[in-house]
Length: 397
Image (tube, rainbow, N blue to C red; front, top):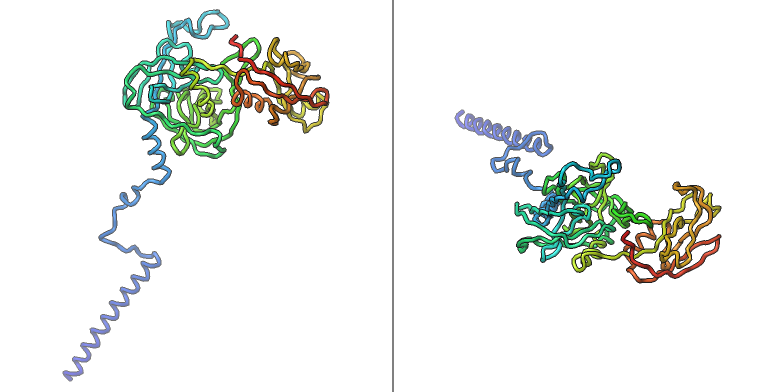
């Protein structure tokens, strides 16, 4: 009896152990299928587990920390006599002795030169620059180029602590590239916004018009990065933290961001800024024509094949290189340029195809210098002809 009882006790113990092991296995099975959380005394707190930022965020933080110290807020004072004249009264468009305006810029070199837009500092008699660390300096205008809307100012103080922002290559940019803008919108200094390149090779309205016509700025970069008044002159950056453009204007009736903004390409900056530092100005080549891009309506009016593309000459300035080369403008109806007849159609320049007026403007602006000769290929009365033209400097008035 005693032995049997002992065996019964052993059997009972084994049964209980089996039950406990089964419960443990069942619990593990539940955990493995995600049905029951498995508490762990060594697990990390949730807020620490999610504290790591994405690679993209880390990149943006790095670019901002490196570039923002060299981006400046610019504040200028413009005397009343330098302000635009009101068309009704004939007086300066202000009843104050001066106006104050703001913009942005970035350090270009170790000599304290800062790049900005011409329209930011144009007509200013006082220029004040503020860095992100609160340091404030006066600056003098080194040079202004209205035709590219670029300007250089030079800081009047110790600039040894501020590094130039590296320049990229705007010819390598593609639609869809991520870009960052840093500037002073609405005088909110150190503001960074992000977007993409929306389009390339846009032609935007320039700042200057003469008796021979208004000038445009070719090759502009279009972006949807949020830009607003005060961003003008600030850098548009690629993901390497390099300047690829100078933020210049926005397309918005109300003067605020509408998702369409434009920047002057950095390769134009490389062409213009050294001349502004050296001479205070730069001369741009001048052909002396006004043109219209062909379209189906124009082709029908001109009685030429619908597929023809090129730049129709609608005006030739007196005594201009184009006039001396014998280029002929179309006859048009009044100021609307409607119902054209005749006129030369430029289809190539130096064997580079011209499909629109923008193509011609961009080539002359970026590839040719004053005094150089170009070969224009054009259609006249259906016949293709070539003519060599030596370009002059754009007239100042």
